[in-house]
Length: 145
Length: 145
DNA sequence: TTCCTTATTGAAAATTCTTTTCAATTAGAA
DNA sequence: TTCTAATTGAAAAGAATTTTCAATAAGGAA
Ligand SMILES: [Mn+2]
Ligand SMILES: [Mn+2]
Ligand SMILES: [Zn+2]
Ligand SMILES: [Zn+2]
Image (cartoon, rainbow over the protein chains, first blue to last red):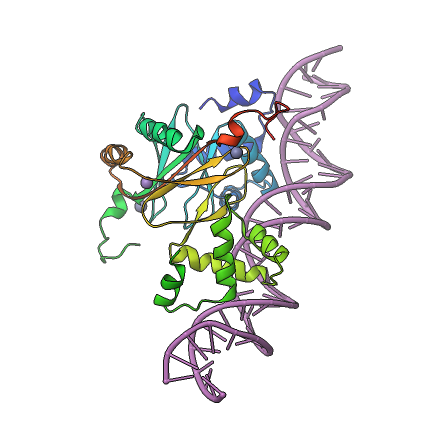
C-alpha cells in the first residue's frame, strides 16, 4: 500500500496510530468498528486511545483510503479501499467483507434514473450481501454458526 | 398507504405514535432521523416521546414499511418504502430523497460477482447520490444553498 | 545529529445517540 | 362497557462520538 506516500504528500505525519490502524485494516477480513479497532490494537500491546481511532478513521476516510460498510445487522465498519472503482460484498453470517472491481454494470441504470428523475447522478453506494463460501453450506451440525 | 392493514394484520395496534410517524414520513421529502421526527412532531403539538420514535421505527423497519438511507454526510435517516423493489437517490445538496423502481439492471453484475467470489448473493444496497432538479443549477447568487 | 515548530496524541469531560426498565395508559377484542 | 395485554412515556442506563487542552513526537531546518 502507498498510504505512506499519500499521507506525507498531503502534509500529514506518519504517526504510530496511523500506521497501526492501517496495518490492522490491511489484514482484517471484516469491516471493523472504531471500538473493534481499539480493542484489537490494545490486545496487540498498543496503548492508543479510542479518540485517536476516531480521528484517524476520519482522516483516512477524507483521504479516500478507507470506506464505511453499512451492514444493516451491525454498526458501520471501516475497510481499506484499494485504488480504482470497487464495491463490497458482505457475508450475512460471518460478516466477512470482500472488495470486488466495478464494471460499467450500473451505467444504464444511472442513465435511466437521470432521465426519470431529472437528478444529476454523481456518486453511488452499492453493497451486496449474501453468504461467503464458508457459510454457504450449513456446518457439520447443520446450523449457520 | 395500507399500513393500517399491515399493522393490524400482524397483531399490532394502530396507536397514535405509529399513525403520526407514518403520516409524517408520508409527506417528508428527505430522510428523517429519529431526532428530526421527534422535533417535527413536537412542533405539530404532539407530545410523543423520543423513545417511542425509536421503537416505532424499529417496528416499521421490521415490517418493511420503512428503510434506512445512508447519506454519508448525514446521520442515517428513515424513509417510507412503497411496495415492490425500489432504490433511492439522494440530493447531495438539499438531501431530498426520491424512490425509483428497480429493474434487472444489476442482475448481470450479481452473477459475475457470484462467479468471481463464490459468495451467494441474497440482497443488496443501492443508493444513488447527486443533485436534484432544484439544485442542479446554481441559484440566483450562483451558490449551492 | 540536534533543535524547533507545530501537528498529533491521550485523557477527561461533554455531548449525542440508543436501549432498558417499569409503572401508567389505552387499543381493541369480548 | 369491561378487561387485558400491548404500548407508551419518563427516567435512567449504556454506547457512541466529539470537544478540549496540555503533553508528546514527527520531521524539517540548522
Ligand atoms: Mn460503482
Ligand atoms: Mn435492487
Ligand atoms: Zn461467511
Ligand atoms: Zn437538492
